[in-house]
Length: 79
Image 1 (cartoon, rainbow, N blue to C red):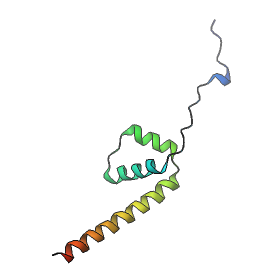
Image 2 (cartoon, one colour):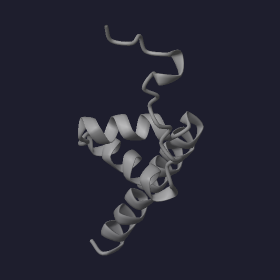
Image 3 (cartoon, rainbow, N blue to C red):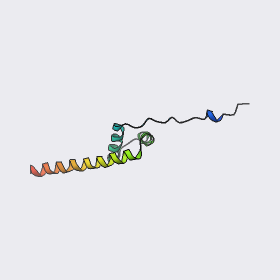
Image 4 (cartoon, helix red, strand yellow):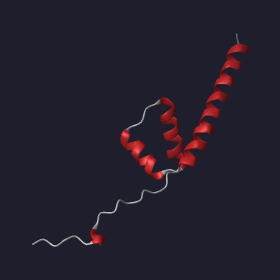
């Protein structure tokens, strides 16, 4: 008869290391464009804190608007 598994024999999913700054920036950038692989999404979802994504998203949106304003001003100034 096979032995019953002990409670300490259960498979424990490893805790992923915390996401780095570049990984968070890449995740937010991919979200802006709507392109990301499911595996990448799952990996980031397990390793990043929601607060970090919110801050990076707000900063990314502000940077995007700032770039748009600069481009429009340059186009208007040279027209």
